[in-house]
Image 1 (cartoon, rainbow, N blue to C red):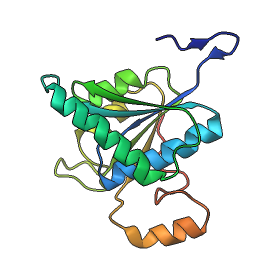
Image 2 (cartoon, rainbow, N blue to C red):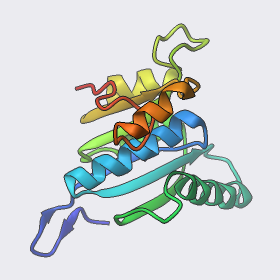
Image 3 (cartoon, rainbow, N blue to C red):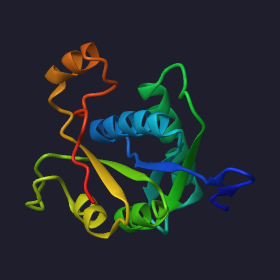
Length: 165
């Protein structure tokens, strides 16, 4: 598929990795907001292992649909593509975000890997993505959610999460 649309120049895109976790749902909220602000198309991605069967792919699309309904029960206010991709999550997200204005991912504040911002997906994306990477971290702190909503924000992600590059 081409990034060019007749008479419009390059297509603007925001890519978000979603796996159903609270942090990835916060990332989806952030990505939807950013896509709206940038007048960009939203690409919602779930990555399954390369050898996964068709049932895993179908389950992936079902999970993406549930994630969108959870984040925006009335539907998103802009066009969005849902994609279940095969491969390693970090590498696949970096590849799919090539040429995008923004890649948004969720992460834990601390991980078993010793990385302050989560596991290997975060560190790989920060090291290899060519564009800006926005990280939504540790949504277990739901006490901040009502305050964020009262302030007019759509999710518990800070107004400027950890943008890099």
